[in-house]
Image (spheres, rainbow, N blue to C red):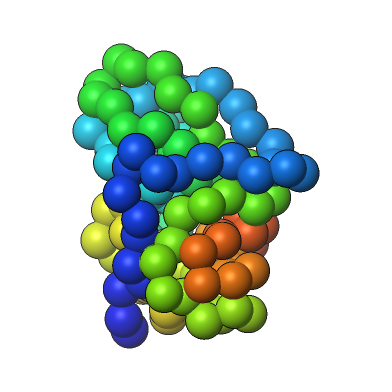
Length: 127
């Protein structure tokens, strides 16, 4: 497994065709980070050491209680030096992207180019 390099939070942006939502954070998140909904309805950094049922990518950074924008599907400017076509997975490290599935597989999307992440969540492991 290898971490995928993210761009700085101030440069993250949604692109034409992305679907975004307002979500409330339940923990500190640094954009761009994969996030998953928790039992309290708030969103934390994705940690695939346990099964996750939902995923989006945070467009903004924030702390517990903040409302931010996140993308559920579509292209965003979020990566640095990625290889186009590479699958992007959630990581066992909360809020990180990886080139391989974590303990409980969760595809976040794929690299559309060196800098574009196409968010297209797919749960691989429900157990």
